[in-house]
Length: 236
Image 1 (cartoon, rainbow, N blue to C red):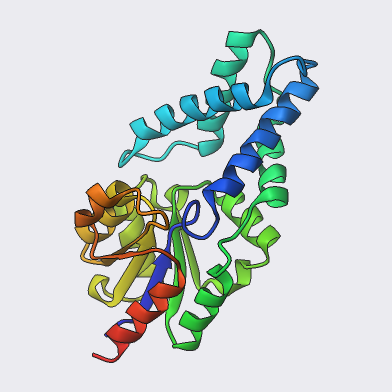
Image 2 (image 1 turned 90 degrees about the horizontal axis):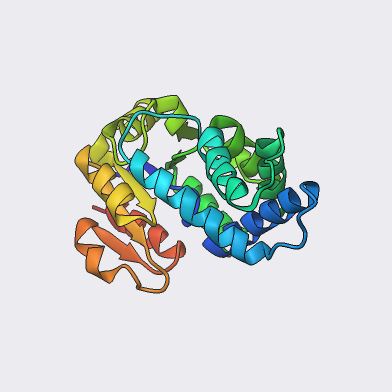
């Protein structure tokens, strides 16, 4: 019997397009404060994204380190390249921009509400610092919709390590086979969820991850389809 549905955050509840805008705004503010508005924001942003992605790729499945430190280090690497300094309050700038420019998928709120109406525990499992996810969810107006929030900071490990998923199940008081996990990363989300016995659902709106679909139990193109999966499981 299905009892819980958990979601990833970035790329699953909020769009990658919104994240790109947010990160460009962060870089733009950093350059403005550094007096380097002569630099191309999009170019610097691209380099920042590359540095950040490389650092996070190395952390997959490993013990947690603060994302604020990882993001700041990525920005520092780019700043050194161009000869400017990263503001001391870089993380505060980052959170403020995420609060302002984050964008939910159009059907995210309705999906969450319908799942809750079905009597299911609805939670989040995300690689995140606690202050980031709380501020972001509150700014989006959806913080109170979730029954539980589990971060890599809480668990002490990054996905796909089993611990974030196990901790979320413990918080919800459900067994792995009673839970669905929805994410946008086949390697981290599907593999991690399935490793503990959860049912994995991949959100792949554009179908660009087809070669990795085999890692997942279900593939959906929009969040609303998760409701149909849940209803089907409840009827069994």
